[in-house]
Length: 149
Length: 149
DNA sequence: TTCTAAATAAGAATAAGTCGCAACAGGAGC
DNA sequence: GCTCCTGTTGCGACTTATTCTTATTTAGAA
Ligand SMILES: [Mn+2]
Ligand SMILES: [Mn+2]
Ligand SMILES: [Zn+2]
Ligand SMILES: [Zn+2]
Image 1 (spheres, rainbow over the protein chains, first blue to last red):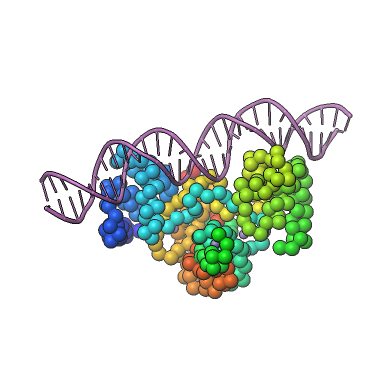
Image 2 (cartoon, each protein chain N blue to C red; image 1 turned 90 degrees about the horizontal axis):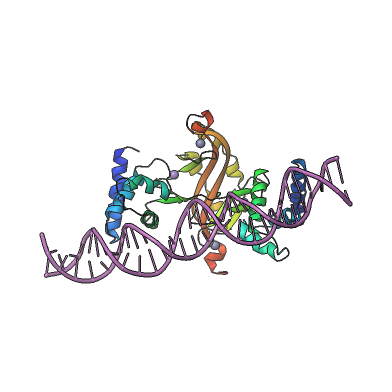
């Protein structure tokens, strides 16, 4: 979280781009510098507005392209998903989700082990606990075997 | 998961709407019947296409309005959120998220307790495990005290 | 049955994200 | 340091998910 950590992230970034033979443009540097320093979890638009001041010609498209590039290289992850629709869930009982990253299917699973945990206590410094849910990412059986789709 | 469960869900639905003094329209009934029977986690468009056959005049907007109504009444929950942007995360170390449902802020938290769990084993019937993360929903300190926004 | 507020359908409007293409710029090789 | 080539950018048009506006319809109270 200190400047050393930001420095380390920037070094990792330049290293990975070089290794992958990808150009180190000023836009990419600026975008990565901005996200490396962010404590929050910014969206593309937020970074864009922030960077626009020092780099007025920057386009939102470049911000998106750079962020997805970083995601592909494993240098950032995402919260939420790429232009996808909200999905609804009728299952009111306490459960968790297995999400297939290939086909997007979501399956419910139950876990007494997880339900027994006291997460509320662990997050009390952040605020009032309402609920918790585990999201497991993986490849579903169908996609694994190539049965369907 | 059987027809009894679907029946139970439909009863709960009609009860809650009546209690809240909200009209039981044929569209709402059809939409809820469809989602009550769904094993997956459908999006609005999927339900719309499915229902369009038996109710050709149905509009997508009604599907959205009905689903958000159900969500407000606590009869369905959502995976992902209402028209929101993807957010990016530079924190590469294993961590979890505290999400404020009021202001949308996302804070990282660390939990040796959670990391120790073997979720991979619990989901092996669904497919290949890649990663897991806990999402805690709550109200953050700022929103709780009204400090900011 | 009548009446009225609430709900719907349709289409226009937003908002997030992407695409196609002409102009531009890293950086490898000289 | 200069040149060239390819990858990258900026722009504007486009797509997709979701919401708004408004005229019309309907559930359900009286
Ligand atoms: Mn579920
Ligand atoms: Mn995070
Ligand atoms: Zn799958
Ligand atoms: Zn908050």
